[in-house]
Amino acid sequence: MKKVVLFIAVSVDGYIADDCNSVNWIKGQDDSVEMKDTYSEFFDTIDTIVMGNRTYKQIVTELSPDTWPYSGAKTFVITHHPIPDSRDVIFSNEDPCCLVENLRHDSGKDIWICGGADVVNQLLKKDLIDRFHIATIPVIIGGGVKLFGDTGYSLNLKIVDTIIYNGVVETVYERR
Image 1 (spheres, rainbow, N blue to C red):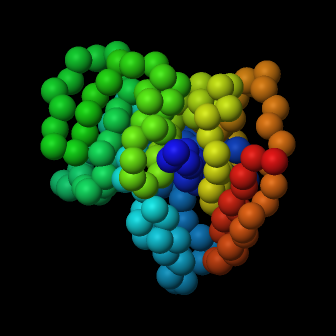
Image 2 (image 1 turned 120 degrees about the vertical axis):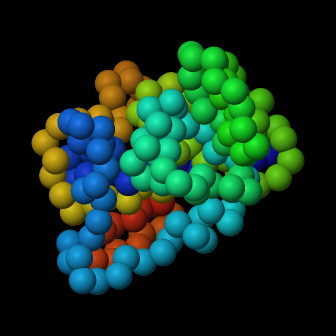
Image 3 (image 1 turned 30 degrees about the vertical axis):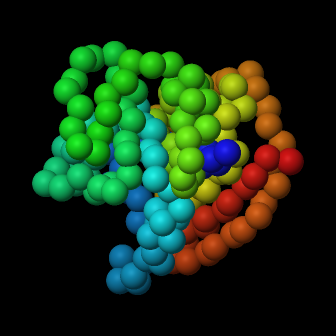
């Protein structure tokens, strides 16, 4: 069965986007130092991506407006708006938990939960995330979109890896 992996950046105070829904604060503490590429190795382990519509819109308008950055992986965008699918992107109004539960049984590589917070928290409540790869960025942004909301759900984790570079602390957790 495929593993479901949350791979995401978060501010020290727990936000994944600022008050303007921007992620331009995701960088190391020293702009002159090149960031370590942990993303490429991670991307090789997945073939399916699930994200919310706001995350999708942020990618195509702010982060990568000219090219779809995840070609080669099938992307499911959770939305309530009817949007025509493209070669790599499928727009779905299916409940994210049902979608992920069905995708887990497909053969292939793992599933990346790319964002946003609403999708993450729905999956968390149903205990559908197997691994949490969280890059903590050395910044306090003071407001915006919290990664983990008040779910009323607790989950015990264990650290399986930690990578530190340029002030960024990437921690990989799995369920205990």
